[in-house]
Image (cartoon, rainbow, N blue to C red):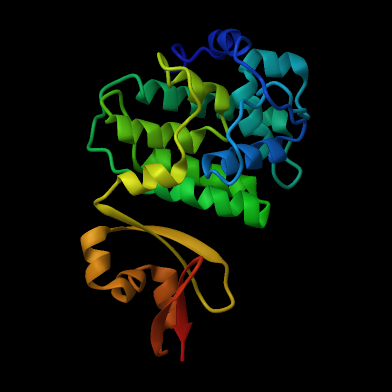
Length: 252
């Protein structure tokens, strides 16, 4: 499975890409890329090789810059990033492998949409890039992509992965040479789905993707199908209020 994924071939090409910005902090690099995908700042080419890692340069060269990025973000509670390089490389190799073969089952975009949408809030509002990466791993587990994705679905997967593994993402836009598509535009293109941002009283904002027809018929009922929302609302009178940032679930 790992034979096809070749980060060295990707990086050889990537060193010819134009560069507009260079950032040493990996977390700030990820936030910047996410903000560009959300059009809150002007898109630009960010140097993927400028970040500093706790990983040795020899290991980074062996496993590739994208694997080093994933390992660095995954290193939590004193775990050494070096020890996570192998698993990070294998995850990228699995993603790369799946994207090269026909999908074995029908692809559902919902986990990938939720990962891409929530990564923005996790990184920019909560300063938690790791949570966004965890959602990407979950999306790959729940909805395996394949070579036969529609262009819309492929753009979704590439844009979701881009902040964390930018070299792999841009390389997989070949033969086109461009930055990934903006996440809000991709979300809107799935016209059969509704991407809903909502919050509970005294809670932060969350994203959930619903079938558009079901949500339009019963918005509150669909939100109450979420287990942790239903638990919080149990025994309470519940109503929805529209807010500029999304829907607020209110209790009485």
